[in-house]
Image (cartoon, rainbow, N blue to C red; front, side):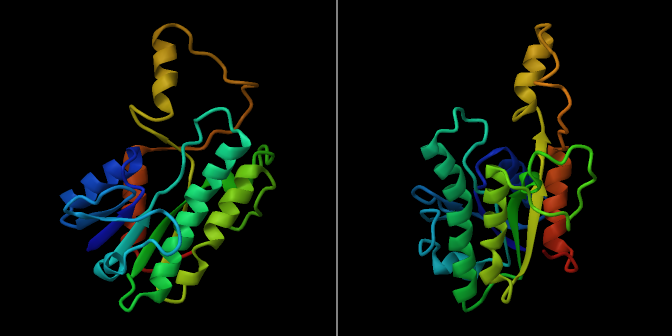
Length: 215
């Protein structure tokens, strides 16, 4: 397939790009800078997605989002967290809805933050209700932003938890443990859903290829 990758410069996007290439797919990037020979420039908001990029693609994967590890979450940074996800997704949805040749599938980033942080030991499934926290509201809005594209393209929202690799969330924990400072985090009673980077990449690839998956 010809895969257009937005937000693909991070840990997950880089690994996904390598995996797709190894499987024979052609990957081009949507970049918020001067585009490389195999990419397109955009501004991460509605009206900025090049028509040629969407028409070229058989599939789109979007993994946009300002880092949640950046502290403190000031009012302005909370707006960055929201806009970097919702505005970028609205831009892609608009471009797909207006495309003369829309892609077959769009795998859009989402997060387990959808469920909020007050569910305790409850088992959460796809149909579980959204939470009421700031992140839950952002993720809910993030997923709804894909709706304009759903009549033209199969859309899959992937509710990802922490992705574990040598980098990312695991790195500071591993470093602390090596120096004898590994310990309980906070109360120690938090549920912490995680997935390995390899499984995350394979799951995204499966969502691209399995035509029965949507929503």
